Image (tube, rainbow, N blue to C red; front, side, top):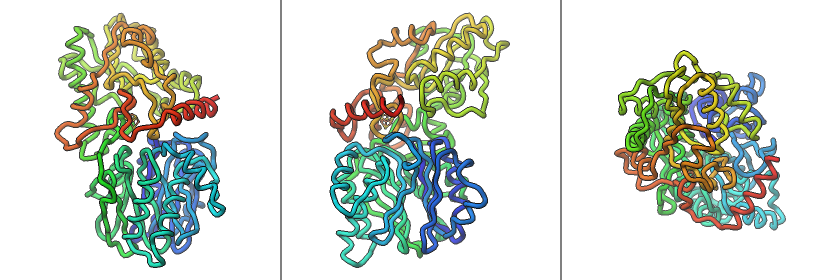
Length: 476
Ligand code: SF4
């Protein structure tokens, strides 16, 4: 997963882009980058968090009133310094780009682009392939006269040639800012405007930090172009079949964001209420409810309220340790769990504790937490999960690429319970997760492929096999 940002204002944007990226930091901590334009492109990017990449000195070089920014968690490629975004090409016009997602025909596109003498790709980042396809299409279709329509034609070319999920922000030298979202709208993208200023962001929380009060979602299959005079052009480039990622609402997004008209915090409350019904149906009777900080906290509070069982903060988080799911390497993750969480003995001792967490990926983190609470003196430890079992790899940019990694891959719920060492394990149902997340929104459907294996875009088996092999190589 990654976070993207685009900004055009009436003042210098460098510091604001960094500010906005800080609000999106949870979406990626491997690298950060900002590119601004004042007639010349200015780029600073590097490995690490936003706070470690940017300083007063390099910020002073990021001049201009328009720019794009990115935080990266690598889903395609080894995540080396070369993969940090944004990227740019000089021809035509000078185009810069950053994205969130994953192109599932990346290897074919890369081979096709590299077979042309004038296209050289310098990284394993799939945004470079989107950028070069976009540049080719813009060069071919602008017919020597730039117009917003030529941007839309180039986006159409990207939609026709790049498969997978991608939300994109970009900048065309001397022309304007643009953004588009793939025809399934899997990864989020929102657009805000006001006072002749405009912004694009993966999550609306970035707009709060930048002072934009009104925003809309970029629709599945839609492109938006804002020229440097502030005029906005929007076009439905290809009919959309919206299938936003349901895991954004379960785990990825910040609870203070609104995505596709769905308030993430409210969705998590509904997930908790829905899970409570399943806990009651299975007859599991805890003394207290304990959220696994932080993502599951709203769901735990709704579960507690629905069941009439007291909520206690039985696990305390060391907030200076990074998110475990986002860290690479099994040993690092296990060590980090123990560094990150500690039980409150006075709250869990001699109690039947129901831990509420958002998901079980590999199962090793859950096992550590269950054992930690048992070591803290709990008489029983139950585990309630706000999502259904994760069983299939995500090919759309979330780092759980290989099927072999999932605790629930070939296990029943009972076998997963034994694996994590809990006294009971209650998963959210498949129906429950969709109904709870949708609420009263008009989202017609979600991508739930990591739960049910149904990929909205379809995905070639040879791609899954290759990803599995590549990922094993990167994580060795
Ligand atoms: S497979 Fe899962 S994590 Fe990936 S986009 Fe679909 S719902 Fe989201």
